[in-house]
Length: 221
Ligand code: URA
Image 1 (cartoon, rainbow, N blue to C red):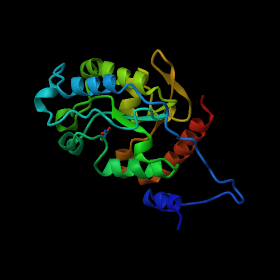
Image 2: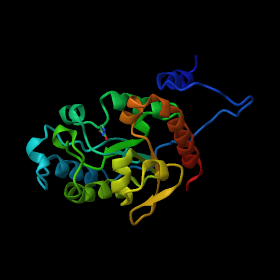
Image 3: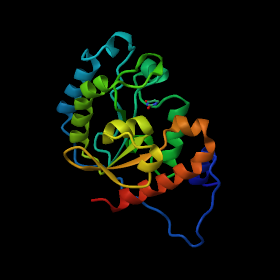
């Protein structure tokens, strides 16, 4: 069984393939070296952040992980309990599914950058507050300025709402290209992997999003 089939099976997605379809390939070659000093300074700043009260309850800040020059940045809502313990985003069951989702389109966690709207865990996994998001967003903007991705993928309703400044239902936000921030970075919305764990029937629709994400990565400048 090839790797793609294994990953799709891990996501519980039935496999069908176009006959004589061309093999997919994607250019994910590394970009020129980044300004590492700025990046490290930003990491250090986040690590000791006390801008909001979440610093009082967190174990670790969760800066984000992956390729500093990634073409794709994945953004979730906020760290959960596992992420808070380890200081790494998407490490629980939802994180494992996110990894399989990426692998299903030929990407590895190291190819992309994974972050959240918030760098600290809200107690009891409550939703991030607007005040917390406003205080934390400058960090995300600086990360994106440094990474210069081709595409952002917002996973889940809450990340999509805060990034796009909207209250529209996820169903209406999926399936069209949005843009984020002053640099107007293309942004695609898909399901949160934690939701997909609760609603596995939606995985087929998530895979449609993933195929679109791969297509966008191939097409976008
Ligand atoms: N859910 C998120 O939105 N982010 C994480 O890092 C983990 C779970």
